[in-house]
Image 1: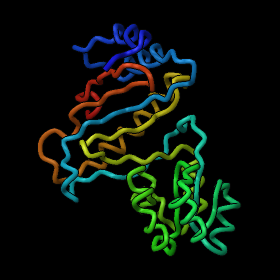
Image 2 (image 1 turned 30 degrees about the vertical axis):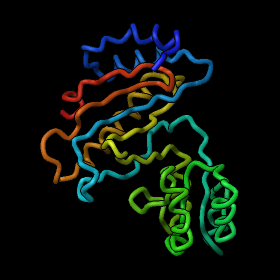
Image 3 (image 1 turned 90 degrees about the vertical axis):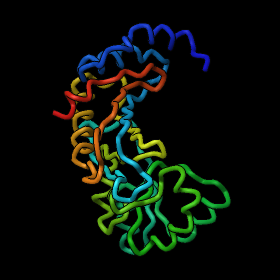
Length: 231
């Protein structure tokens, strides 16, 4: 894969043989985020889970204390008073059956998170093929299938993020923007890691966290010292 000049220069600042402490990794990520836009700082956690087994799946959500720095567009599937509640709480889009063809046939996906009341899941289930692969399907574990739509919307706008295993048993999560100061990124990172460590399935044998890498959108990955994160 051909890399740009900026990436190659940034990569020279990272010692591949070193496992970095959190503070050093964050400082290096910020230094290497030199794109013309405010890059997102991402964490990639390779786990020892086997996602093919239901009892080794990791999925949940956590509210980052300083948010993600991103404006999140929320779609809520609800009817009646719950739809009114969603509007009042600041949902960007609220609807029911009428949104199904718009999403299915017209490819409308101008939203980042989908929340649904439990009674709407029969309808939302029809969108599984569209929303599922994009990680947008509402899920009770993530708090996005709920009757308390106000709390769901407030949490998401406050910086709630979902985490889940991908097919390679890796969790990919944003923890903020490169413009955040180091303390905010460190707080967000620690909050995420606490949640991931707590979510360890009891059936996982051997190492749970195999590697943790931090990077900005356009920057090189920086490996962290996992042993220090677990203690």
